[in-house]
Amino acid sequence: MKILLAEDDIRLADLLEQAFVEAGWQVETHHDGPSAYEAALTGRDHDVLLLDWMLPGLDGATISRRLREYGIRTPILMLTARTSLSDRVDGLNAGADDYLAKPFELEELLARIRALHRRAHLDDTEQPLQVGDLALDPLSRRVTRAGQEIELSAREFAILQLLLERAGQVVSRYTILDEVWDGDTDLRSNVIDVHVASLRAKIDRPFDTSTITTRRGAGYRVEPDPR
Image 1 (cartoon, rainbow, N blue to C red):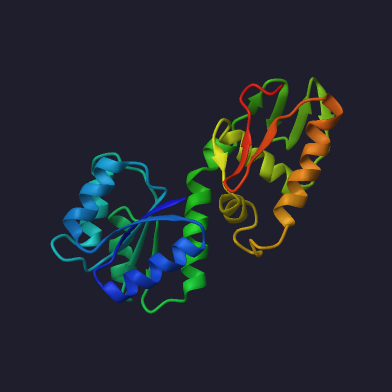
Image 2: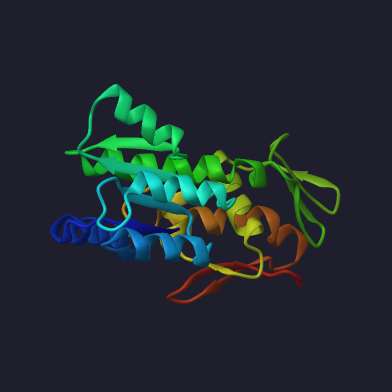
């Protein structure tokens, strides 16, 4: 996940950036409104925008409103010391998807960012996915290979769905941890490797093929044309 962080409090921005990197996310940090707005408008590769309301030069609410007017649909989480109902309403009416008042707990912020990211990708995850003769239907929760149905656990299904959505790309263990476990496990454990091994045993081994490959030190990749 890639986050655009716009926060003029340097100390807070540094703390948040460190927390996001530890969560396995990419972070682009800005300390003023105009540069944050320009990055959000021209980059368009961010998964979540985290905007402080009181940014110098251009406030977060104005940034949010202008981005929506330009058709930018990236999820926006507004951070602010303003706590009144009218302020919250103003922020949401400006186009923000969520609102978190300062001071806040880091774990709540991380959870809200994950939730925004999931909701933003909900429509994509409802589409059937297929690589070769391997097919996954998110709505029916069915996986088939060469017409044969394969039973997967909930975690195995989620990992396979993530890998199929990004077929041809290397998906890091950080990303799997964040998307499938919601960050609620230790990356140093072998739980991801165990689940991937079990998944391979079900979707590859019986069919004498290799769909999921390991990129040592990088992560896993679904081959677009498995052999």
